[in-house]
Image (tube, rainbow, N blue to C red):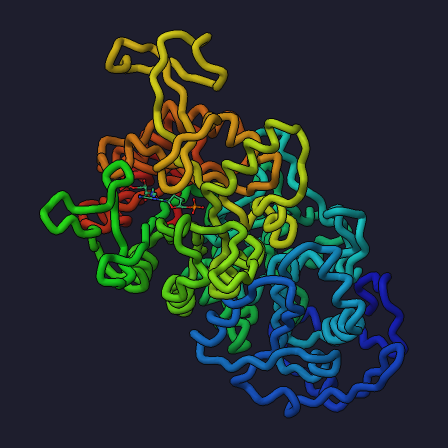
Length: 586
Ligand code: 1PR
């Protein structure tokens, strides 16, 4: 039975899917595939189960375009060893193959073609060998993508990968936790219907008559897009199981253990909208004894007001991050708050924190602080891209840029030219804009008349100290120490144009005060941009979270002090939000 177009590659002998390949009860490595000779364009490969290292080994196709550390960590956490693909033969000799596509579609296809891996992948998949593609690893199976294209894909699944449409108010990238709708016998997803999994992408494949036999689940974000495909032993998911907490780990485990193929009936739960995220933030710095601690400021002042004037110490970063993961945080952010003066690559403990945390925390990790060009004492120059790359390699999923993004936005607004050289532009070009957060640290400045300032202002509910009815939000750099001639509104719009994928919106006045988020500011910014906005600073009670989601278009709410001081558990925040009708991941 011929089941798929095979447009991109000609294979001398193409093992086609037999009808048994569609059977839900297939086990791995069908006997008739073992020992079979496959002849690619130029070489012969012998497929042999033993060659891949046995049942506890999974073969990973990492073509070096980005961070697949989280996938590695998740595989190891589940008790499996990893064999890396070095050459096309390794693909054909795999017992089970995971392909966590990262980076841009065209770049990935280039590498696969140049290394002869595209052809091997097609052969492997067409012979119904156990395969799990993740994110871009799903998209590459389609015929083509519009990402910087059209660019031709592997052509195994009918359809074109296109960009989400942001014109109807949906924020792109699609970042966050969405529930799945199981469409057909999905094997490894069978009881995951209605559960939230983590997505981060700007492009997606759409269901059609031509690919309907492949679709195992969909997800709704504006339209229904393809969340996963499955045929026989071949699976691919648009979401990130390695970042989807216990639900994601259970999906990976099933794939790795080759269990649960059609044994359970899909459980139907109602599909969802995008859940609002609750993020735990850890401001990290070295204290005066040189230990890296989680600290917390009042309006960015992190020192105790005692004789010793010590940096407040609220715990150890790796332990606290692990705790918040267990407590149900949807993401964890680390802000290296002295990064603006200490070079992060010299600050190895921060990289170690990321490495250790990512071994046991399977939700997205963001790290910020000190992402900029730097020349060290020996005259060695580091680009911001190198700094970010080191953060990604150490386990970060996103990097957050503060001060350097302010300078880039000022320059862009002054010249109207995108130089492509700012850290923001370079990192988003290489890692995708979904991997770049801009952290804004604004301070509220009251004004009497709108004509007094050139920046966007809001009418305040409570007048300022001198009866002022308006306020603008002045951006700062260097941890709030220096005010800059740019407003938060202008900055947000500029960084969106320069390639930011998300905004972390702090507010110095509200930071650590526990009196609630600055609703005026968050509404101003979340209405101004079409990328997700994380509301930050000021959470003191569960009601503050429902207020910010009710009154603004924030996609996530971040808090620090109330979690560190154990005043309000994450679980209580989420239970409250659910009760208030806000969709969250439980
Ligand atoms: O400028 O690129 O090196 O980045 C520096 C980063 O460090 C920025 O993201 C900046 O926000 C952060 N930062 C710098 N100094 C401080 C400080 O506190 N002295 N922390 C600082 C900012 C703000 C939030 C905080 C929320 C929630 N912290 O992250 O966690 O306000 O707090 P709350 O819930 O207790 O109110 P660069």
